[in-house]
Image 1 (cartoon, rainbow, N blue to C red):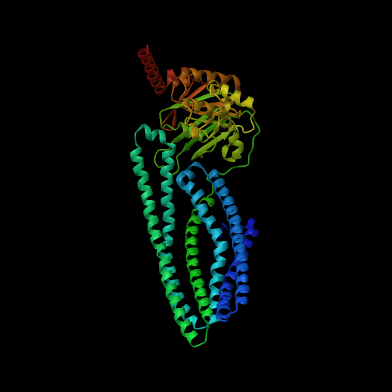
Image 2 (tube, helix red, strand yellow):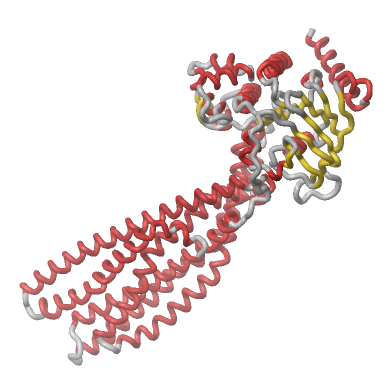
Length: 578
């Protein structure tokens, strides 16, 4: 019922469909009566004129019924397709509003299934409901009335047949209904494995794990198929059982009709009509079975959709807006643990500051909390303790769009999208001019390789930038971050694939063009951060040291050890290369 609001804007289509279906059903119910007239009064009465006129009437009604049925299907499709369209958009919007911890909880594969397969299940149910929910009950009731109007003795057949059919339907659907939710979960697993292998195809191939991943996908797929087969075995037994009951009922109608005809209480045409009506009645029960099957599937899918729609984003937007183009960032005694994480916090009592125009770097071993620290600034996560201040105001009070519009983020893993190079750079500023796109690319040291392509900035790149090298993707990611001219620019190890010469030119261009921007750089290489105004050394989630390169060499053993190990490694590499 909670999803019913999505059909309201299309109530006109939703109303016309059952009305048209009502017309088709009434015509279908009237046809056996006309056929009875042809047999009784036309054939047996040797009245050719009646046969022709009644036959033409039947033909006209068939055409009218066909138009009504087609119209019912068309209106139902219009209502259900628009219903699905609006629902899918709302679910996608909700997914976009969820935090990383919430999307991780659902998993990517499950969210894809809910947005596609589950919405389609509910959409198909709406289309069926607008037609079958009218056709089946009216055919059922109308058929009983018409059959009893021919001879009340036919009620004996109905009294015997209907409970049997209802019992069969109830039992099988009761057994099958709980399994529909299980099927959807198995489909989640298949989609998750597929998504992991598509996005990680290079890793799979480089480690020659194709056979292993084929086995993993095969196991998930077999599990889905086996569960589906259990459901289908139950459902496939519905039709044969109901057909047996229906055929036995037809035999009984013919048997009773034969006696009634012999006793001259009925005519042969009425028996033919009764057979048709009994068939319609019992077939409508089969349609009811299909309806309940659709209801069970749709209910399972609707519950999964509502689970997403009813999830409130953990990161709630505030209302504060700041028009300052110069911004500072400060972390005061910040601690942070990822949801579900127990034990030592990822960040513990961190104090961190960067002012407008400063170049600040964060250095530390893998897992020391570098990325976690910068993820708190745009509120990808919220800190557990302490506070994160943006221009002196807690980030939790900021309007999320306003806060994130002031921050440029370049990641180590560059996410690019299918489209032209210019389109990918414009992600940072959708209304950017061609001149601004080129200027951003030049600062990011990407212009040279872009212009080397035949189509230049109009070169179409594959999904996730598969046609580009790691360094090229990183430079496009950097260009996308800087084109928005942010107040705070964060490089999360986004120069790892660049050689030191290219990185040096990039840093020089940034210093010349972003004099008022607060720049935060996460790096593994000391050569990348030596010229920073201030360097924070993180160890086990805590600030182990802070200062300039020279100060840290004198006062921080951790920094000195990193410096020595990297410089010795570079020197040794130079000797080998020489």
